[in-house]
Length: 336
Image (cartoon, rainbow, N blue to C red; front, side):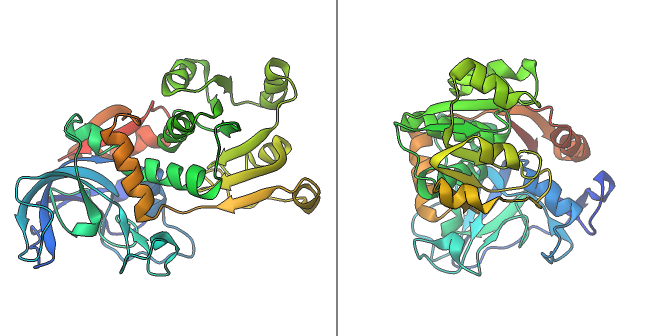
């Protein structure tokens, strides 16, 4: 079978499409024929190497996918051959209700082989039946970013309908998910985009107000909305936005962060935190309850997919470059 793998860390040139054996499923596993996979920034971070996180190589990349079950182990009870499924990207040893807090928690395509292959074997905890109204490409685009955003907004920040939220990077996968989740709650959403051409997309996702993210962002928000401060700031940018995020945070406000794409070293004036009773909340992936909640919302069409462009496995370098260049409007998909 074909699989997108890296054998060393580095630039686009380390991405290879290798021919490897089709895995066989054990009694508690299913064998899935992968139909479509989504790219995430995690793929780029893993490809480049994550400081302080040893990654076993060679490694099959990818965390999000959809496909069809082609074989089932004898102990599989809830799925059968020919079921269409999506993949839950978190790995863990037991259900606790706080799976992503476990020291053994991992992510497909980071801590073990991922989904960007023609076939994969997984346990039942890593699969869920695909919504009938979605194509394979659409169904593969939603899991990791919606799980991440749901955990951040609902479980960590506990955003309510009478609050407002600032979402950076509205055209990114996690930014688009954050807008949809926040609007489903009933909150007021202010979103940022990198250029004028991306404003319409942010409004289509449900944003109430959209601003171009430049050095005048704070002034432009204040000019249009008054001296608005935010109850929640949805952070996944890091160093380049951190001071601005703190300055825009309301009394009792919460910054919730899941990443640092522009750098992880920031300065914090502790007086902001205790004088204004603000909170900084970290968040990684999601527990199974969040995954199930997200899938229910997708089934109900409350959360909708956002596919930007589809590449073939043979075009994986172009797909990574498209993501790195930040030209996408939604998710980038690769198919075998």
